[in-house]
Length: 482
Ligand code: AMP
Image 1 (cartoon, protein in one colour):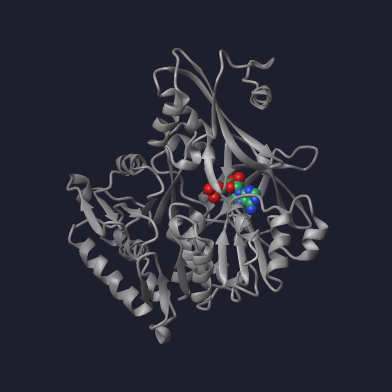
Image 2 (cartoon, rainbow, N blue to C red):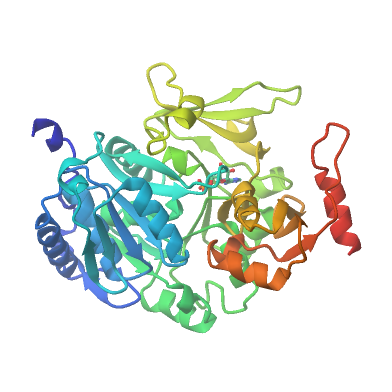
């Protein structure tokens, strides 16, 4: 009983918006909720969840997209001490089933159909996670199995403090959200609005396709804080409507998740002359982000080729391991913002999450260097890439192709322009004639759309280099010749 008490986040106690309870808390794809309405909806979901007699610490899956009930449900979970696991409907339903099987959860809150699916099994009343976990976000894993990053209450409180001191977030922030809640970038807006009593404006995938409607929405709700990956904003920057004359309130542009090209930063500062462009860096395993810098015209002029990712937050250290002659080393993050590890994955946890001076630490697989006290991102160690902001482990794509009995080998290669990934190409060797169109269709049922390669090329055999590794450069040459 007493250990279970540790889970209480009692989030709503932190919110200082009592005076302003008629203010909009959430504008979602289906409805708007004032702070008063939001709080009473949270209470309703809490009551409903309590019927199932789950133990605190029992993981709850939330499946949906941009409905108000997604946030209502996750807040109810936080408040009751159930780790929530967000799964967005942009993924094929198989991903939901896979994750449900991994976490052994008895509950799926479906915010599209507005219902709670309860599968009565023993686990509901006997199984709980022992740490005060707020959420588990599943990223893709190189072995093909998704990895669940577990983030605890102390990491969230540490993150909240950073948002308060270094970002100056307050109840005045009106966040533009578009990232799926299963992508930890969205934790900026979630924690940002929830713990300071601000407003969050959710934008569904469908809505985003209509620029005019989207811009109207940003204006109507007076959004002042933009959060996205750099590649998300780039398409809007080409629009003549995307300026401070038209969308007057936007003043902070916050980025994370991939390289911020200086052309993007320059365009924003041109279109929105008095705005602030914030670049942040960090993996999901260290609660959203770990470094921050305000990208000014001076910074762009000083570091035009590679913008800094910024200053390491207080209470966290980034060590560079195995530094080479150019002072580049693998980044290791040490601090309270680091995850307690992947969900039930002791082997990988032992490799990646070795405690350092009694603090949690994580080896990122990212390479970087320090200059003028700021961190700069150099490149990644493994095959984890970013395409339009989505994190993809290429091995996961290959595994799905080789699951087809007619495919012998598969290798997926990112085609890049500079450091930016433009598209994915999958090369196959096969044991029987195969229709690549049909194969693509099959794969689309299993993998999310952004992991589907643009082209599939069948070869008689793969080219190898002298080390007997597949020669990826040669594959790119072959592609360019086809
Ligand atoms: P995710 O866990 O999906 O947020 O992906 C984390 C990875 O994205 C990091 O390990 C980096 O490889 C990359 N990343 C995140 N932020 C930045 C940034 N500001 N600049 C360059 N790469 C970044």
